[in-house]
Each structure stands twice: as structure tokens, then as C-alpha cells.
Image (cartoon, rainbow, N blue to C red; front, top):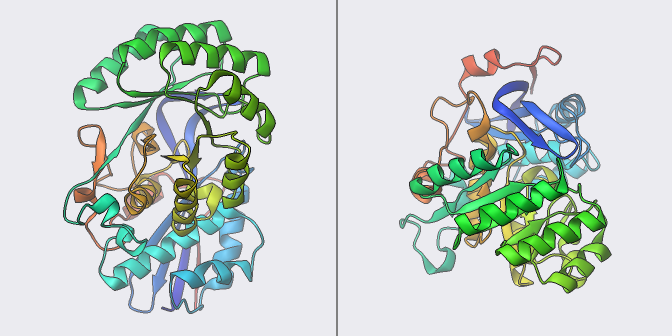
Length: 384
């Protein structure tokens, strides 16, 4: 496959409401879309969101890296999926987020050329013995992040009636005692569901103890990333004391980090994101390693990415077939998506029925790319 053209779009899309996280409040999605064209005129799409507190990437640095990578790989021949990583390494060190956008776009093209959905190219389609034609649910993980307990309970009740069964309570933004109160109130109302709390590295050791103790008492399914990246020993101690399962997110920046946390008993689950691991292929490899070690999986997009990243991450989920802790799909928090027919949950889940078109199965509308184009970073195009 010959890459004949690359286009890079930097976008800023308003959110339906601000998302409060430890260290930042997100009001606009800042994301980069990359489009690759092959010699037959097919277009493949990839995306990477800005995540300064997770990957160290701002919109500007991500845009610059994507441009650098794409300009040097236009004209390259890609024999198969296994060749993409080595090709990128020849021209750019690190920069997993920019590489994720390029790798996803290239994989989209390869799957289109093969005439199969991307998850089939990634090795899925018969996960857990289920045939490819049978709809398989990828359970949606909904975020409760307003910090208003009554509002969150009402929100959860409404979505539960629609079929949602996976929940994430954002903690670490405000008062720890109020977070404890929220956990103790929300968990009983969602009994039988998968209910987690996510601190995004914000908790002190004392606050982590308080949140974990409340979670263990209330039936919380797991606590995600309570402490700062690298706090492996502290997470291991917290699990040993409370036996509340812990999920590593920001701490997982490569496949090697999964083995590190597993060996230390510091995480009983991991959150996989394409921007941390370098694309759909590396994410599937990381997921398979985790499953082989008895580690549970959660999939997530950065807050917030569009249908392009949402679809790519869903394909990873269907290729792996065992996403016990749910899928956090963030395009639902955008005021508008860049795809006319955005990927959306049905009955609280995404199914394989929605993912049957060849390749990624989704592409943005040109007018929407223009509408949400960043004022600071212009679209860049490179050709053979």
C-alpha cells in the first residue's frame, strides 16, 4: 500500500458542559485528526486528543508531531500491519499520541483494502466463541462528574432505565468527605452494576485510604488511579490493606507498565487508551498481555475525542472481546460530532452490528472539519 497524501486537522469542539477533572476543567475538546490516502484514492482516518496531564501533549505539540510524522511518511510503502510501527520509529522517537493517529489511519486503510471491519483485521470476530455475525455488546461506562449528588443520582437513574450498567464517579476534585458521601450514596442505588471511582492521580495517601475504605464498604467495583503516576508501591499497599481492586490509567504509558503493575499486585485492571499506547494494534497487544496475566480491562477515549477515536477504540474492544470494566466513549460529551452519523450507544452499549462497514467505518464531514478548525493551527497537506 502506497501512502500518497496526508492531511492533518487541528480541531477545537465545545463540550455540552464542562467536565471537572483533577488538575483541569475541560470546556472544549482539543484534538488532531489525520487522514491518509492510498494509491487507489481510499481515505483512512485516525485521531489523537490533547492530554497535557496524561501524555504531556498540548494541541500545539500534538499537531506539530503529527505534521512532522506525516510529511516524512508520505510516499512510504506499507506492506502490512506489522510494518507500521517500524516505519514510524525510523522518523520519530516517542510521541505515542501522534503515532496513534497515523497507525489508526493506516490500519483503517488496510482493513478497507481487505474489505473487513477493522476489528476483524485486529484478530477479532470470534471473541469468546461468538461468531462475527452475532452482535456483541461493548458496555458503555458513563461518567458521573458534576459533583452534585442529587443530580448524579437522577442522571444515573435515567440512564439505567436505558440499559446502562457501568459507571464512573469522578473524585479528587473537591472535598474528600463529600466524595466519600457520594460513593456511599451512589453505590447502593446502582447495586449489581459495575461502579467505579476515578481520581486521575489526585489523591493523597490519606485521601486514598478514605475513598478506598468507603468503596470497599459500599460495594465499589474498583478505584481508578488514586495516586500520582509511578506510585506503584503505594497502590500495592492500598490493595493489600483494603482488597478493593485498583485500575491503573495514567500509570500505563506502555505495554511494559502492565507487567510492572501486575508483578507488584498494584493493579487488578488497566485502562487502555490509544494515545498512550500508539494506536489500535499496540492497544490490542497490550490488552492481550493484560488478559493473560489475569488483569481486567477498561477502554477509554480522552475527554473528549470524536467518533473517529470512539470507533477505533470500539474496534479494539471487539478484537479483545473481554472488556469487563466497560468502555468510556467521550464523543457523547461534545456539542457536535465531526461525523454526520456519530457513533452512539444503543441500550447502554455499542454492538458489532454498528461496526460492520469495511475499515473504521466512519469518516468526518468536510464542512464540520472547517467549522471546528482551530484558529491557531491550519490544516496541513502533504503529497507524493
